[in-house]
Image (cartoon, rainbow, N blue to C red; front, side, top):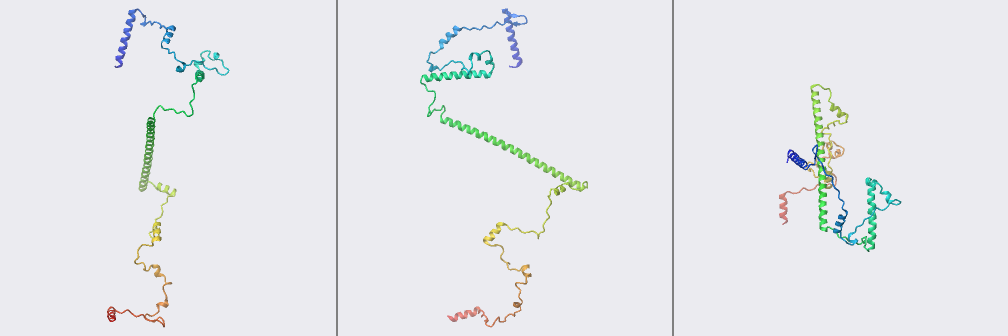
Length: 298
């Protein structure tokens, strides 16, 4: 139903009410309907009769009902405390009145229970059966743990998303900064080539920051730094490199004349006896001669 239809229905209802009031003679000038005053009925006898109908005459232990007034404060008078509407308007006083009334009721009820020999305290070894079974509580606990883990996962995922966003933002800022610096450097180089600039500013900034370019070393000046792993293996197993041409003279050994060169040894004639008791070692016979000697022995 639209707003126009609802307003039309309300106007029709008000018109019918006015027509009824006009017919009954209750319509006053100005289209005002006179409303009869409401009658408040306080039939005490009828209310007591109804109370006796549904009232159950049971013992107090079955009903446990008490009607008490608030306990008096130390040194106070109940009649003077309840004068006027100050208690109803003041929240603190009203709550204190409720508290003192409950206190008086509890004290009276405990005294009545003790007279009836009913214990009001549980023994120390009292075992109360739970309203829910262990299986049900186990399911509840598992559900709570599952919900807690789901919340932790969602929080962790949220933090990771935030970190990724922050990382991407930082990366974009760094890339933009590099591109800006590169563009500025290229523009400065172009202007320097065209003669619009005398000096390049980024070179001066590098020199001021101490970032000087290292001079290149010549090929002969470079020192070979041995690998530690290779040194350890060489110490353990020996040098396993090239074996041939190992006795070739080097530039250092060829130029050194102090250790290997001796005039006395080099001036001796070849074939000359070395001493008095020197005996020439006989040469080995040839193959044919050795064969003949072998046949003779047989």
